[in-house]
Amino acid sequence: MAQKIGGEGTYLFSPFIVENEKTAASLLKDPTVEKAVSIGKECDIALMGIGTTKSEFCSLYKENHISLQDIKTIRAADAVGDVCAIYFDIEGNLAPIDFHQRRIGTSLPGILEIPIRLGVAGNIEKAEAILGATCGRFINSLVTDNLTALRVLELAQERCQKEK
Image 1 (cartoon, one colour):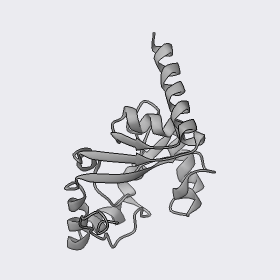
Image 2 (cartoon, rainbow, N blue to C red):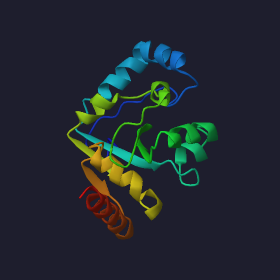
Image 3 (cartoon, rainbow, N blue to C red):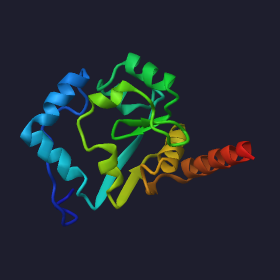
């Protein structure tokens, strides 16, 4: 894809999520991994999926990257979605979970430095996750379908009315 749009791509030869924090810390010290991860924050555009914590729609769970117990722990922290396996609640607050220490990738501050953070997600079941990603500024542009967009707007309006 990078070549098609005239950009450069970098491969990260590492698992995305590992078993524990110690393994993640060790991998992140590897020079090849460290270089690929640091390049991530130098991007002009990040194309990122927005995931949900609903197990039947969670691609990380469905593809066996995380366990059902992981999902339960993440949901217990009130997380509704993720961007790059960084979980947040519907208001966009970072979920207080140790899981984040198991991911191999650009840090959240690094991601937030990327000028265009394009979130891609569709399906009404992801509306809460999309709202959380938007509120938390994990994304600043969105590609979705019209029914999902309408549901996100409804949820945002409901939340605003509750705050009054």
